[in-house]
Image (cartoon, rainbow, N blue to C red; front, top):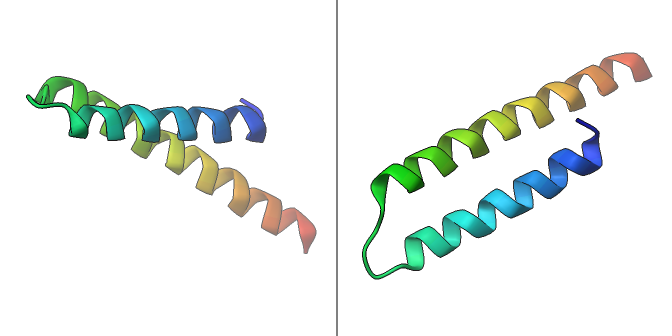
Length: 57
């Protein structure tokens, strides 16, 4: 995934999570799935940034 795609996915997941938490009845399975996917996306984003920093040196 390109950095732009990752950023878009991250924004979409954050929006989905906000919507899930604002629901009257929380769907725990949905919230857990979103949180897991969001964490994985953030790990990928962080690892890409770390690689970019190393190549700048």
